[in-house]
Amino acid sequence: MDKAGPAKLALNSFWQALTILSLAAIVGLVSNQLRSDRLPLAGNWATRDQAAALSGKPSTISLDDAEVLFFTGSAVFLDARSPDLYELGHIQGAHNLPWEDFQSRFDQVMAGIPPQTTIITYCDGNGCSLSNELALVLLDKGYPDVKVLLNGWTLWQQNDLPVEFGDKDSP
Image 1 (tube, rainbow, N blue to C red):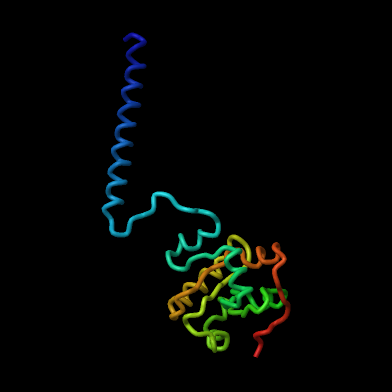
Image 2 (cartoon, rainbow, N blue to C red):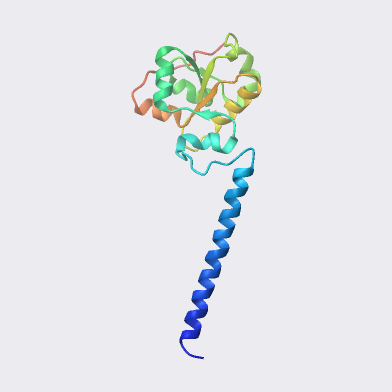
């Protein structure tokens, strides 16, 4: 067998593989377009959008948008962290509704907050999912305008926004 044989075989294999991959991509794109719940072909996969992508329900909010809602008094902030962390510092005016005490504290914390209120949940750290879990439960309880501020406590402090200390929600 001459040297042209293996090279020609490799080239043919490459083109066959490329053809199969191209056909698979075309079938996938056409199938997606025919779906009623199409998947977006492009999206913003920034950290702040990860919670919405994972759960499919609560949306995230940028720090800039949360800041506007804070200073206009247009939203209620809920800290999903433990009471101990909340006491060490939290967004000024935020209520503490820790995920682990949700059932026992829900009525007390949410008393007087109408369901149509914009609610922003937050916790701390990029890996913290407490705010997302809290948002999901609030959506299920009939609060339709719930947003998650990912890494909220750290971002808030880093931008020198108003904070306070102590437990303003203690009975």
